[in-house]
Amino acid sequence: MSTLSVPLTPQLEETVNRLVKSGYGSNKADVVRRALKRLSEEEAVNAVLRAETETTLKGNLRDLMKKI
Image (cartoon, rainbow, N blue to C red; front, side, top):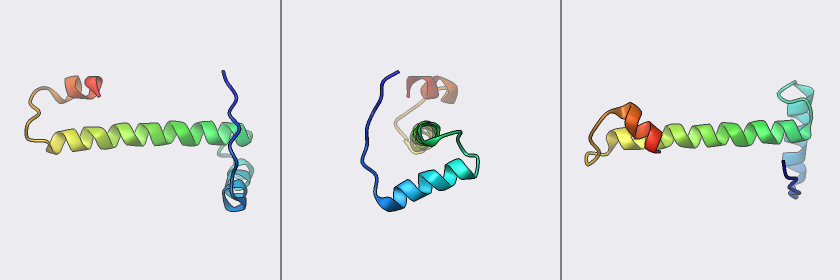
């Protein structure tokens, strides 16, 4: 696992601290990891939703999701 140092605005740092206090993550790094994972999942869902509306795509939706 690698380490990444990212400058945060005071507002974002407060948000991270608040999320740790509320139990979203066990520490700051855990909160950021969970947020990035959630963003990645949301992007995947959005890609599938866009693919569903694409008229040029044909085939099984599960197969299309695997490709994305």
